[in-house]
Image (cartoon, rainbow, N blue to C red):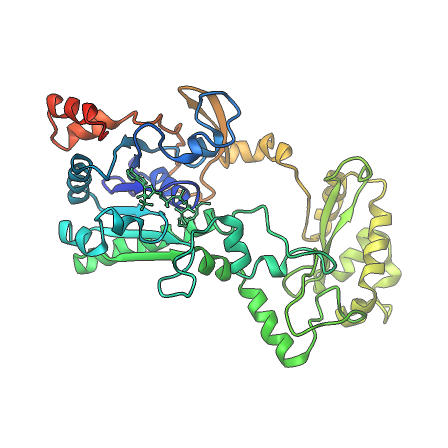
Length: 416
Ligand code: CAO
């Protein structure tokens, strides 16, 4: 099966998570992604949090599948020459170095587009160009704090809290992938490449859109009726942390199920969808609530919503999270078990769909990773193992026209 991005050559000058997540996605869909890494050490994640001595760490393998690895010191004259040749033959260069690092290497946007006017140069930075923090180095949690996620996550009586989901890193990479694909389509129209830039702060803010909605509602009316602080608690002038409250117009909460005393994940998320009130009452064996004026409307329920949740927990007390969901799904109630990573790793549906896949690796044997969350009718992304450091160096140099002798010299000068 041919893949839609076949024929697109990408210089993957990325490291850690934000950039590699972007280029990995493009590699799954057929792009030839050449990961450029410093000789000797490579991407820092190869050696971070190792679980097997001397083997590439899972942090690296899970973000760099389907790529080829070229070691190249882009600060030596010989290394720069190789990169220049590669730039002339490539469609996209993706990087997520600290602000100014690419320029310091001599590869400014002007220089790159002079070498190849069709090149798309895609960058991740912590903050957007011109922002008063645009000189800062940024990691995941820094972005979550700067993007409004931390101030609105957690419980009202605790500190700002970061999410385990990589809102700053992988999420920014996904935004960049959309930018690159858009620029590729744009290039088809204009014949020219362009610079695509995504900041981690902006990408987090994009996902915190409903919290900006809430800030404006709060400014106007002084309260937010779907938050646990309403109607008994206090609101200040900023969007508060709402614990596990539903973010839309449907109240919801994480509720205890059988075994919660010993199992940290024996919970479900339960949503009270307004129009599903009648089935909820029937599922819970509370038909008397259906027309009771204290319960019949969302407005009437809100003042004692936590008493309602407590009653639902009583109903859940003798049911596992799976049993509960199996009953509630028959009543069309939006809900799900709280799944641990162990349960996700072993979930037969996720294995069957290709979302969780086991892939071979030369050093590790096999490892588990997250496959493509995007499913196509005409493409089944096949996930291959990540490359060893420099595994494809000679092959890529030969493709660029270097002779065996020239390749040997590049090795001797430690440029590759
Ligand atoms: N050959 C020669 N030099 C290389 C090279 C190569 N193949 N690859 C990288 N380098 C050099 C860079 O040019 C840079 O040199 P200078 O400091 O002299 O300009 C140096 O390696 C270090 O790069 P860096 O500053 O990007 O790396 P760091 O570990 O200090 O910072 C990070 C890491 C992620 C904080 C920073 O890169 C950054 O802020 N990136 C943008 C935001 C981002 O993507 N963050 C998400 C990371 S995922 O959590």
